[in-house]
Structure formats: structure tokens, C-alpha cells
Length: 70
Image (cartoon, rainbow, N blue to C red; front, top):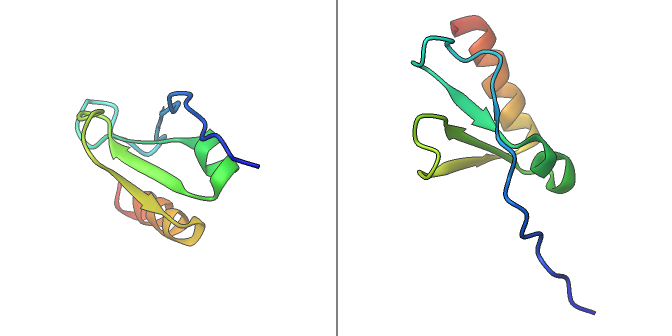
């Protein structure tokens, strides 16, 4: 049996902790996280640029950091 990778484009969602004035904006891919356990994070100003792949714990730490430093 072979597994065919999902070729659907990722749906990126802007973080609620992002600066609403176009400055410090990050996005994440929630459906990808739910399906794989990998939390993808990118800079919304550079959608074709690199992204980070975080564990659940790493993503939780990033959110906690944003809460206290945003």
C-alpha cells in the first residue's frame, strides 16, 4: 500500500497575537497541525519564505511568549 501525500495547499491563519498594524504578523496552519502534529509557523509578510516546524510543546511555548511580550 502506498500513501499519497496531501497536495492541497495549506490554509494559513493569522495569529490573534499578531500586531494588527502590519508589523509583527505570524501565521500558522491549523489543519496541518491537527492532521500531523506538526505546527507550521511563518511570517505573514513573506508567504513564500521559510516556515518553522514546531512540536505541540514548542508551539504552546511560542503562544505563551506572545501573550506576555505582545
